[in-house]
Image (cartoon, rainbow, N blue to C red; front, side, top):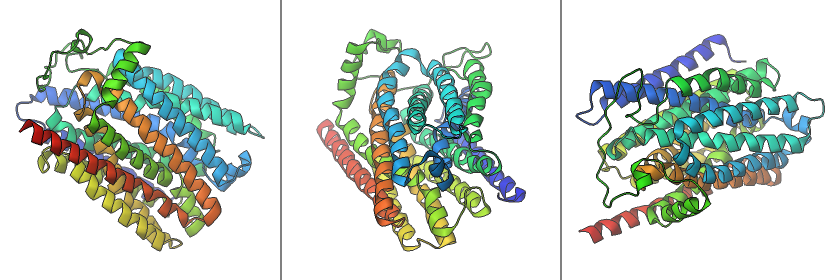
Length: 471
């Protein structure tokens, strides 16, 4: 395990990044926001972000224990373990497509509560299964799928809550904050998870998030998190944010912010959202990001172990995963700021630059395969571009394209596309590693940024055509 001083330094660096996100939220708010409103919004996203981090710890527990020891215990090869991962990702994709509509109906806070309960139960059961002398592979895969299905409520609920607190001109900043939450989630899941894995039995990697979701996540949902600025919090009424007037009168359900729920309503709203060309282009971009993200995240730890002898939880591994989290935070905050302030809230140009950065880092990863420090550096650098693009598309672009009442539906459908790509990327990487060795990981992941770039070029063309027609 990494020395205590290294672990303390890593945690301190992450806390400094959180402080930077807090400063960005307070300083980059639109003029006219009252101090009370900004503090209430800060309290709300800090609470939702903390809960989201716990979901990430549960989501990536199988990636943390993706080592030769665990695969031998389950009796599977890398491609077989990739099948478990793809089953979970596609369960997430299916669930998120349905749960977006459910979150729009129930509200984000209730969605988080349901997710906390279900995810805690399934994580606990995964740990129990791994504690058996001969764990049943099929049962482990099914319970992991349930875990991912409940996990899908997390991102949808967080986005559904915060779209009510951020104006369109502030959503680039929020995408940076959302990226900070994702990055801290990865740090807790991968770095802290590897500490648990090296110090305790593998089952504790699953038990820990289960306990935290119940003891911390549920109280935060009940006592702190609020769906809208108009909800009462500690007896105070917080003013509503200024949002653009709709171009046409909304339906009665949308005026209340609660679309009707049911199969016919789901299909109607899904067709409405998917018929929008900006949504279609954004979905293509997210399929590519999902392919690249999970192809990389699910296998980079095993890649470093197999090619460079970097074991989970040791000093080099700890520094690498912490650097990845910090680089992801940098990419998210910088991308959100540039898109809002320099690109007039256009996300496509920034994501295109990030796609070029991903390809460059993957090439560096391919060239340096087998060199411990160079490979670790390449893995850290790719996080700048990968997670910066992801936070922009998920937190900003999905909210930019639809009215707030359908934000959960849009996020759900877009997330479904992302996780279809995630599952395919994770499985394909495992198959290619079996066939061609670990060097294949870098060029397997390269398809992701290519798809994302195609989606962003399409999105920019659609936006340009719309501007020309409006003029």
